[in-house]
Image (tube, rainbow, N blue to C red):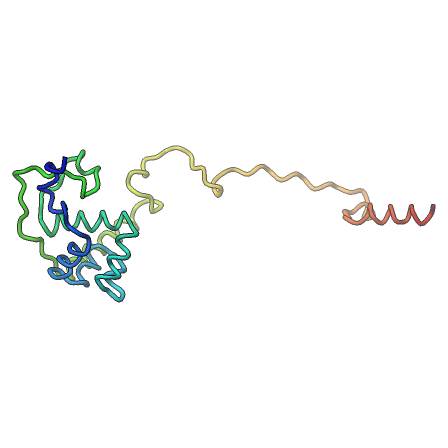
Length: 177
């Protein structure tokens, strides 16, 4: 079974080696902007990045995908392989790593700004897969609330609501007896 994974550049690659290769080629600033991980932006270090990536599976998968498709510049996988985590993907024998994709900080900042604008332009800031949903929302804010019961109308001011009225009445009855 491991033979089918041998063409995957992540096969047998330690997380520390992966981070070191990426940092040596791109640097912390470009990685921080490309991946939007705070571990590459604030006080960056290999040790701190490893700690974050070991604990956070989605981030580890994101950096592994970046390694495969930007650093090793492999072609994008088909839908069945894309559904798998990057380490579990089977890369065909004929696909070989190419020269890494190079980025400039300005390009990445412009791309991130475009992404932010597109996200802000989406209706209700919902993800694209939820936009066409015509079902009613189950949010507490959108449910119709039952109408309030009308307040009891009292015939006189003596009948106004007093939570201690029954207690006072009981005390007076005890004193009289």
